[in-house]
Structure formats: structure tokens, C-alpha cells
Amino acid sequence: MGTSDNRFQRTELLLGNEVTTRIANTRIIIFGVGGVGSWCAESLIRSGIGHLTMVDFDRVCETNINRQLMATTETVGRVKAEVLKERLQSINPSAEIIAIPQMYTAETADSFPLDEYDYVIDAIDSLDNKALLIRKACDSSATLFASMGAALKMDSLKIDIAEFWKVKGCPLAAALRRKFKKSKTFPSKKFKCVYSEELLENKGEALFDNDGNPIRANGTIAHTTAIFGFTLAGLVIQDILKKQ
Image (cartoon, one colour):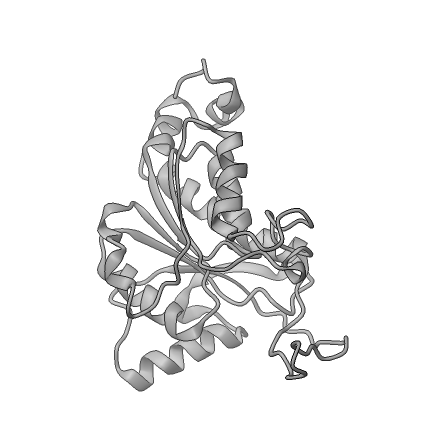
């Protein structure tokens, strides 16, 4: 990378040339670029990551605007991963950034060669798909970092990091553990998670779709989802530094 690239001079000042060069050569794939994943992706690119693949099938909608980085009134209706790619490419045009508008499922999992990446970031909401990704990532040579539930949180000081089986107070982590135990298929290695024990209640009125059916959704806010995402990115950078 070198100090000739002024965009990353401050990072190099903090970490040194050798580490920033390794950051630039690191390959990362992130699944889900919503309230957590979008901020994680931005932090990774601003930290100098040179190879980032983003997987998300969804499109921007108005309800994303309160917490998702690329969601604005102008981007509603566009594919999230593609909008985010444009922003990230404007930060570092030299980075290899790939947007894959696809859902990670049992049917598509084999199309993602996880062994080709140094890090896998799990920011998926769907329980089944999340459990599958965790197992597949743990079976690969990549290092996995995962986000647990970021909804119904307000206190940023309660956001923490723990190994998956030691996460406390998070309904999503508990549901994943039950799922693994019921199926008797467990992650093959340990991995770190970002989580919060805080669990608030929704205070607003219930949401309904255009047909009048209730929507299962929990309240979220930008500062907590963003801190989840930034913390995931921090785990990656710290791990690269540790391997110096």
C-alpha cells in the first residue's frame, strides 16, 4: 500500500507498513449488508481491505433508512449490495469489491467457495441460513466472525464480544444453540460473536403489510447496529494485527 496512498496514511501511521500491506491483501466475504453488515463493510474498506465480496439479495426499502448505510430516499428499490458497492468503490477505487445479489441458502451455499477467503462475516438474519453459514464457515479455512441480534438494543456500552457458546442474554444466539443441539450438527470450531445482553420491548404500534397482515419486526436504531458492524470490522483488523 505504502504512504504514497494518502487515503490510508493515518492507518499506516497507527499500524505500520507491513500490517497495512497485509490488510490490503486480505480477502473477506460478508453475508448480509443491512443494519449491521453495511457499516461493517464501510469500516473494512476505510481500513484498507483490498478484496471484499458482499452477498445480499434484498433491495433497499423505506424502513431501512433509519439504520442502513446505503439506504436513502434516492436508493429505495435498488439492490442493497450494488448500491453499497458504488459507495465503497468511491472510497477506494483500487479495491476489488464484488456485489452478489443472492440469498445464502442450502441451495446456493455450494456456490460460495469459503476456503478462498481469509475471513467470513456473518450478518444474516434468517435463523436457518445463519446456522448453515456458521457450520460451513467453521468447516472452511477462513476465520469466522458473527453478529448476533442487534434489534431491541439502545445501550452501546452493553455491546460485547464473546465466543459463541459463551454469549449470554441474546435470543438469537439461544435459538441457534437450540437448533444445533436439536439437529446434532455443531460448528466444528469456536468463533467470536458480537452481541448484547440488553433486550428492550417494542413500544410503537405493530406493523402491517399492504394486505393488512402483521409483520414480525423488532425496533432498531442506527447507533447500535452500526456499533455491531464496526465491532465486527475491528475484530478482523485486530486479528490481522495479531498474526503479524
